[in-house]
Length: 166
Image 1 (spheres, helix red, strand yellow):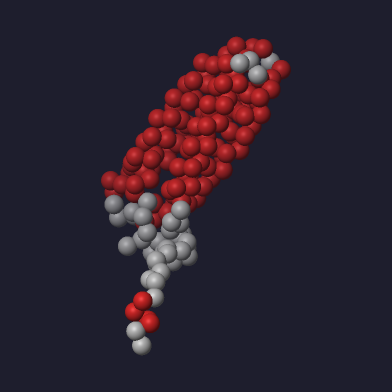
Image 2 (cartoon, rainbow, N blue to C red):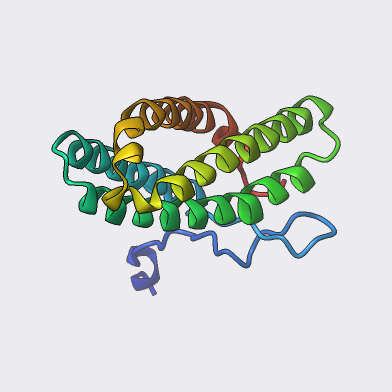
């Protein structure tokens, strides 16, 4: 009779299927923000590896790291577009200020992504092109600065809006 009183209480876990934005099939993903932040950490780590390889003149390594960076960035952008922006747009539909902020963030990221992907395409043959090797550092620093600022803003502002539907 008393044994039920001493059972360990289990934590309730929010599953990905448990919360959908009203009127949609778009679900809240409890681990999305931590996954996006992990992506950021990985991209920043790759950026550092590219910088080190470039400064050492190891352009074969630079090309390899740039390819990995492209893949990870594209994966991150898709994850953000599908799981974050669309969700937030529907979730905050009646909130003009926040939907405007989300729209601004999305438009800005599309611009940065376009520039970054053009940069990555331009430098994919850096290993064998001395002209590209000479131009690389300055453009790479500019891309890094833009992405670094963007990551800080996403994590401090945009990601804070992500929550289960209420």
